[in-house]
Length: 80
Image 1 (cartoon, helix red, strand yellow):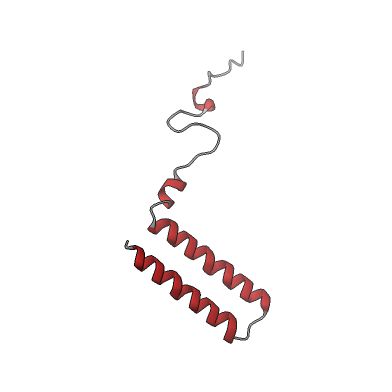
Image 2 (tube, rainbow, N blue to C red):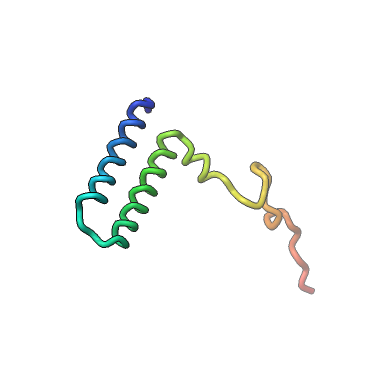
C-alpha cells in the first residue's frame, strides 16, 4: 500500500475523530470509549497494512521459534 494512502487515511480518520469530539455533544465517558475503539481499529489496520500483524500473531512467548515446547517432548510419567 502506498505511503500517501496510509498518510491520507490517518489524516481523514483524525479529522473525523476531532469533528466528533468537538461538535457532537456526548458524555465524556462515551467519547473516551469511542476514541479508544477508533484508535484501536486504526492501530490494527495500520499493523495489517504494514505487514506486521501476521508477524505478531505468530509470536509465542516462553520458547524459541522453531523449538517445541518442553511439555511436548517430556517423557511420560510411570504410574506403577
